Image (tube, rainbow, N blue to C red; front, side, top):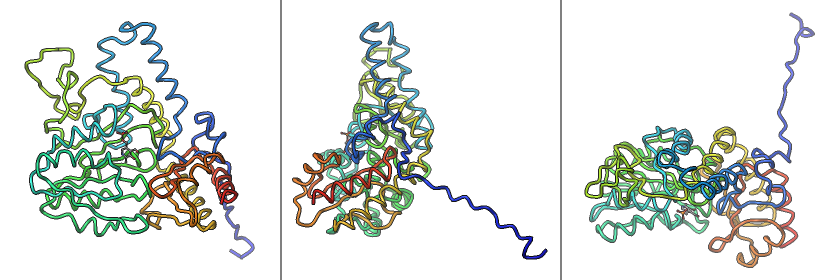
Length: 396
Ligand SMILES: Cc1ncc(COP(=O)(O)O)c(C=O)c1O
């Protein structure tokens, strides 16, 4: 075959337009009105989620228990349970639903009761709701919180974190993604180390569920999340995965829903379900569970790896833009150690005043401690970031 016979293959490089939003404006209409970079505070709510909640509430207002009978109250969390088992690569038996991350974590902490003298490992940049439940129980049992301190850029050294896990450790309690800087931890690594020392790894996924993969097969022992941030659902719903081992413990919070047959109403005994549902204890704003199901289904249909990839592309653009403006970007540098959340300080600017200025310029971000936190999600485009960077530049 002569050279003239060689046919060059046609290479199609897929060009993603800068206006592309993975979560479309039909589903997230405000994404076109604002430069909304605040999912780490409250994600834009999926339109279908908001609708599902009001449908349920309106039906209840019109028909009471005709619309929501006893069987419906038993089954009303099933669809959310299925969606979350899929998201966490777990089984339906491993999932408990309640009204927030905090309440589920609190119940778990009292169930685990880290013993006197044992070490609960946490970072000093974790969210209060991740660790307060464990601190509260430690006050009673005599366990100690061992803090891993961040450096000046608010970064935790994962090697130091790993090295601190030893035979005196009972619980490693991490926020999968730190609320401030977006630092992300390798759950497999810390589950393995914790288990090697007879400890458990308990994870708050409120800043990660919906933006990065969470897989129960990493060996994590418990994962709890609220649904109003990266899952784009409502306030009022929390979900927790618990391993088979933790499904045998006695939950810290119990109520009528805790009994195997909740409609039994015999108060002189309590038989807990043999699965994670033992952490479900009472009524909640059930409509929010219908809403959360809608938004989580949309995330599953879109694909979590596509969301991670899209968000990474967008947040890289944001980091580059901020650095060009001379901002100090906090947290780890490498993609592997960070999520889409980006924290920055602007030299010579008071972050509190600057956050207000940005809001006036329709760049929606949050002041946290002494920095500004930007958190783009799958409904954002590169164009949003460019608009945001221009607005920031004009405000400096
Ligand atoms: C990591 C983390 N956990 C928990 C919460 C809040 O928990 P809850 O929804 O239970 O109040 C937040 C809110 O910012 C958070 O960032």
